[in-house]
Image (cartoon, rainbow, N blue to C red):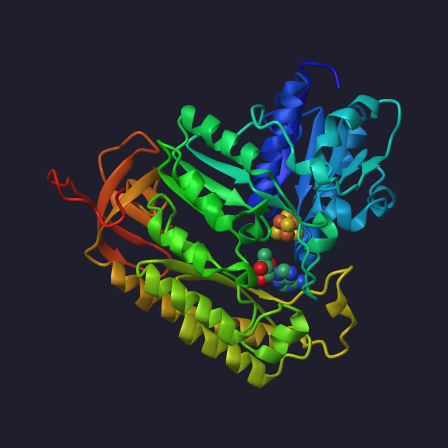
Length: 447
Ligand code: 5AD
Ligand code: SF4
């Protein structure tokens, strides 16, 4: 596309998608394109999409419908679908929405500039390859949203075969990014003022390079001078190890936060989901972590109403909540997805039953969170300021263990670190007051 034209990207889905939008934006800007103010204003409109549940795909299809009139009023606009829905639906998108010019899967995003060169002469271009070299990208040109807190890919794809999940189909087999590339990106970012990195992967803790595993990676990134916080998402219980626990315990930059989805508390359902572990293994992982890192915050994902889930199975999941005592939980109604084996199960759970279970689960989790958050009362935490608070306080930010804190303070420059004493706790966040610490004392999570 000609230099100076404007692009607009809309993004759905996980952190990986948010980061891939940053990567595509960088590629486009390297070609001389500029960011537009919105879809109307843009010569190129890209939807970077999520297919994890039917509803996510549905939103993309609705949005494509809305864009039809924009294309009719200005046929020069180029419209592309990127990411997981591109992979899920492929050429069907062109039939369904002929105003779409470009369909590019999540492992082929580096092809976008090449396809844009051809798009004026050839319509309906598509690249759905799962390129293994997708992890070998130049990081210097990434157009990051936030220079203080940076996303960083460490592993792409998923080689598991969970029976409900479309991601192995959309994102292809797992490939680890080489250690040297990751380290040079971390150093590059820290030299330019990044304080916090979030390491990304569908199974981030499965990362390997030669003899190094994810625990080594955490320790080596932790040794980069000037970096204050390291987060990582999403971990798989099968790849969670004592070595990772020790790296979390020993390395002060690694945040005491773990997102470890159990998906269900019933062994029978876990087997049918093909998760590869038992409820006992899951509880042992988090038990060992809490023993080594007592102030860790823990979150998880749970699917309710998986095919064949009985009342008894669901009770086992509720019981897992009692044992796990998550600090936060993402819970979903099972949604049948194409290219997954669970769609073949004939014992689908009726929608009303799923809804009832989801409501019960969420209510129980609210009660657990309310109690769990009370342990923060009176504590002084180091908070990285994120911006104005939506809750009537002046500012908000997060502790190293990921707790959202609203607080009163004179307006600091966003992204600085302040110490806050928690004076009230709620279900999803806490609030407090800024405190100055006398020299020699340190807040609980200070470095
Ligand atoms: N239905 C409902 N939830 C799903 N997830 C993944 N696939 C499905 C599905 N088919 C949930 C899992 C996963 C999270 C990102 O989305 O809990 O951890
Ligand atoms: Fe959605 Fe999963 Fe794809 Fe992320 S990897 S965009 S959560 S389907």
